Image (cartoon, rainbow, N blue to C red; front, side, top):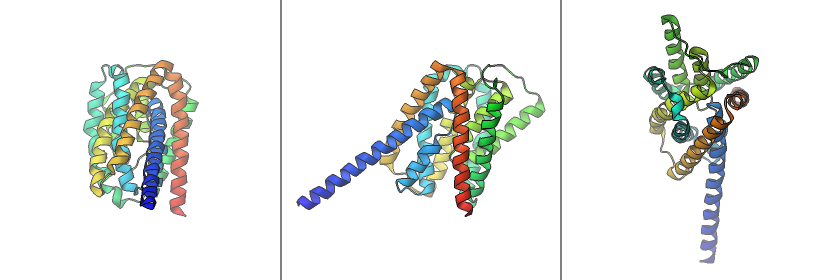
Length: 270
């Protein structure tokens, strides 16, 4: 009897420690993600995998948790959406089919190629942001001609495919695409990214990925709490400190995400 009690207590302690560890990882990774516009999977997904959750289940859990991130960030900065709802509809209508396609083909595509492509793109984004000191610091209203609009929608569809099949970096791509295409500032672009990618893209991706295996509910609850609070706190910080902090965090997160994905890709090739 004492032995069984000891084992039970050790098991409870282990679960409490694991839950606390995942909450901290979730909170801090989503705080930085809320400031930069993406990159929560840099810490959150590896933490889930290290907890013994299979990759596809961990990816589905991560995506469901980032829905909470999107809600938390959107609640704090919903006013920044302003008059951009037509852009939001375009991202949803043309991006969601890409997300569904990506989540359907993820089982048949080697992860190492996805990691390699997205890793290179993330690092290029970081250098581009660094070399353009005024990028995303002021807001405009760029009117698109037909060619530019078609190009934007094609990019949104392709990023949607990446979002459905891989965890890190697609929010960063959408953020920079909005800045370059519509001359948004970082705060405005990130608010749009949270509303569209964070809530709707990730929810649809999670639903389609969940068919591969059940999502552990105890871990998921902790992730959702950490993601929501981290998202709200990060959005609060970004609003207080403004676009300069967001730009610096965006550049840093792009580099970290890119390096992380390249390392994963290189390991897969070896």
